[in-house]
Image (cartoon, rainbow, N blue to C red; front, side, top):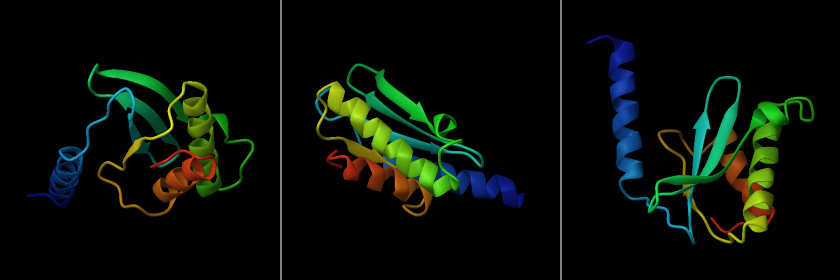
Length: 118
């Protein structure tokens, strides 16, 4: 088996294992994070109805912050502010297949800084 195929298979297994334990509701939605090489995106998802409540991406902050970690922190703060406007106080953090490190961690810390309970 090719190395890249094996790595993708392991990443998918890690994602499914993490996702099996997490379920978002309307009162406590799931904060899902997607990380690419250039950008990072986050969205609040209500799994009970299967709808995305709100979303954001670092494309909005690429001019304001210099590093990707700073952009991720701004994204977390932005998501928290949008959630507060909709009356959401608590969320379940879904890091997907990514390690809780670097940009993924910065999104969580930014959301906590604005008072969103993870």
